[in-house]
Image (cartoon, rainbow, N blue to C red):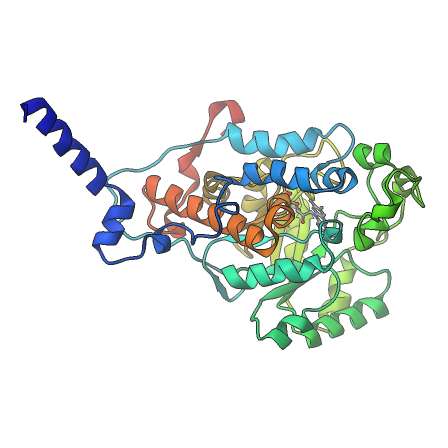
Amino acid sequence: MPIDRRAAIRRLVQFVAGSPLVAAAARGQNPSTVYPPSYSDEVMGPVNLHEFEPIAKAKLHKLAYDFIAGGVEDEVTLRANRDGFECLRLVPRVMTDVSKVDPSVQLLGKKLPAPILLAPTGGKNLIVPGADLVCARAAAHVGTIYSVGGAPMDRLEDEGVELTWWSNTIGTPDRESAQNYAARVEDDGAGAILLTVDNQYQSNRDRNNRNRFDYGYMSSGVPQAKQGQPPRSPAIAAMWQRHTPNLTWEWMNWVRSRSKLPIVVKGVLDPMDAELAVENGAAAVVVSNHGARQLDSVMASIDALPDIVQAVGGKVPILLDGGVRRGTDVVKALALGATAVQIGRPYLWGMAAFGQEGVQRVWELLAAEFKLSLALAGKANVHDLDKRMVRNPQCGL
Ligand SMILES: Cc1cc2nc3c(=O)[nH]c(=O)nc-3n(C[C@H](O)[C@H](O)[C@H](O)COP(=O)(O)O)c2cc1C
C-alpha cells in the first residue's frame, strides 16, 4: 500500500477512536448515557431548541401558535431577551481538569440534575387537553421542578410519579383568600409558592387582538367547529382585564402567617424590588419579564440580572427566565450570579411537536448543551463559574 494511503487510514482510525461515542463504548459505557437518551428518529430530529418551534407551528392552530409565540405590542422585549444573551461573550479557562463535569445545583434544599426549571405557562390546553399533566410527567422524568397554576398534581401521586412542584399564583385580592390558598397548596404538597408579581392586568398583545383571540380558549383549546366564526369575546376587550392590580408586599405577610412554604417572587427587574422581596421574606427571586408578555420595552432579563445579583448580595437564590435557548445562555446566567434558569416557550414547542417526549427532549438537549459548555469553558461544576468569564464591551460588561 502506498505510504500516503496508509497514513490516511491511520489518521482515520485515530480520528474515529477519538470520538466520544467510541471512547465511551471502549470504557464500557452505553453512548446514550453520554448523550441524551434516544427517542424515535422524529423526536430526535431537532438538533437544538430553536428547531422545535417550526414543527410545533405546523401542528398548531394559528390562534394557539400566536398566543404562545407572541410578546406584547411591538415585541421589543421579545427580541431583547435573545439579543441580551447573544450580545454577551464568554472567556473560557484552559488546562483545568474537566474529565468529570457536574452540572447539578442545589435549589431550596433540592438537588437538581441541571439548573433548568420549567417556567409556569398558562393556556397550555391550547396545545393538548390535560397539558399540565403531560408537562408534569416530563418534569418528573428529567428530575426538575414544575410550576403549575391550577389543579394540584393528585393524578401523579396516584400514578406513583414523584415530582417537586411549585404552585404558581398571581396573588389573591384579600387576606382571607391568600391564607386559604396558602393552606390549601401546602396541604396539597407544593414545594413552594411561585408568586407572579408582574400580572396586574391582561396585557396588550397585538397578535391576539388581530386574531380576535378568545381568552376562554386558554382552558378549552380552540374549538375546531368555531374556526372561522367570530369569537365570544374579542381579545382587544381583554387587554384591561383586572388580574391582581391591588397586589402589594403585604400579600407575603398574609401568606407567611398561614404557611411555611417558601415564597419565590417571579417578575422582578428593578434591584429595589429584589431587595424588597428579600426584606418581605422571599425565599428566592426570579428575574423575569414574563417572557416579554406584559409590558413591552422593558429590559431583557439577562441585562437586569447583574444589578439584582448585587442588590440581593447572596441572601437568597436568584433565578432567571426569558430567552434561554442554549447551554451557553445557561452558562452566562449562572456566571452572572443566577442559581438556575427557567424555560417557557421551548418546552411548549416540545410538547406541541412530540407530547411528553418532546418536553423531555427539550430539557435534555438544553441540559446536555449546558454540561458540554461548562466543560469547554474549563469549569468542572457550577461553582467554578464567575462573572469575569462573561464580557462584551459593546454590552457594557
Ligand atoms: C404561553 C405562555 C403562558 C405563560 N403563562 C404564565 C403564567 O401563567 N404565569 C407566569 O408567571 N408566567 C407565565 N408565562 C411566562 C413564563 O413563566 C416565563 O416567564 C417565560 O415564558 C420565559 O420566557 P421564554 O418563553 O422566552 O423562555 C407564560 C409564558 C408563555 C409563553
